[in-house]
Amino acid sequence: MEKRQELYAGKAKSVFRTDDPDKMVLVFRDDTSAFDGKRIEQLDRKGMVNNKFNAFIMTKLQEAGIPTHFEKLLSDTDSLVKCLDMMPVECVVRNVAAGSLCRRLGVEEGVTLTPPTFELFLKNDALGDPMINESHVESFGWAKAADLEKAKILTYKVNDVLKAIFAEGGMILVDYKLEFGLYKGEVLLGDEFSPDGCRLWDAKTKEKLDKDRFRQGLGGVIEAYEDVGRRIGIDFDS
Ligand code: UDP
Image (cartoon, rainbow, N blue to C red; front, side, top):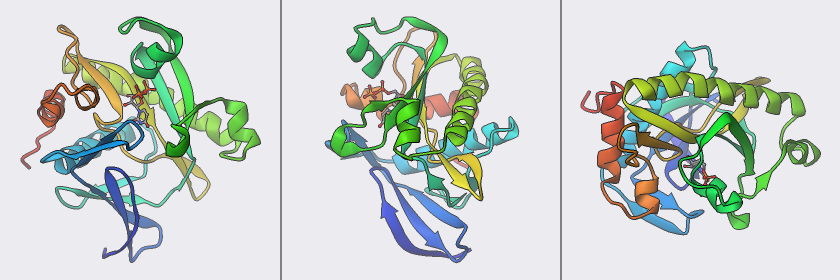
């Protein structure tokens, strides 16, 4: 497999073509962004930590029967994935109220949500990733209704798998964002799963161990990501 020209640079990852038209390389950079890209900083080791974190989680999800684009780790910062035709929507499940849900509905942070909520956001930084619903997705052609339904089912299935993994490590999976795409007609989980796109709290102390440390200027961002990783069995040195 040969890494070829850069296709696209996102806020935290770059995407490169390969000699196989069905595969591409994700390069996890040290860049960290928040507030729809309005604040960007470099955090040492972040690319390596998120690449290995994502590889571990994607492998666990695949073992649990959730189809993902992940193929294999190529280096500390690079992973080989299948090329997907991405749906421009973010699927968010929440087990506990935090973040935009609290701002939007005036709910207190920490309230348990039973059953977990499911929300959709349009991927559009210029519009601030507005909340949308399933009828918007269909009417504007962002995805077919049946494919969105599959993505929704997979998003909930991810919750069952990951809640248990993080609970074993003494953490609460508060919420998370997933992105899906089509590969030869099949809906696969794409993008990444790392503490950049979820909220994780220590189960006892409720300490924040995710990107809220960056958003809220709490410091120790990568140290927290590595702590989460080690608690679920990731070896960042291998
Ligand atoms: N999230 C994300 N990318 C986004 C927006 C949200 O990864 O562009 C994640 C975020 O980290 C959290 C979940 O989705 O785990 C729900 O985010 P929320 O709607 O509360 O928005 P925020 O408070 O992050 O603006």
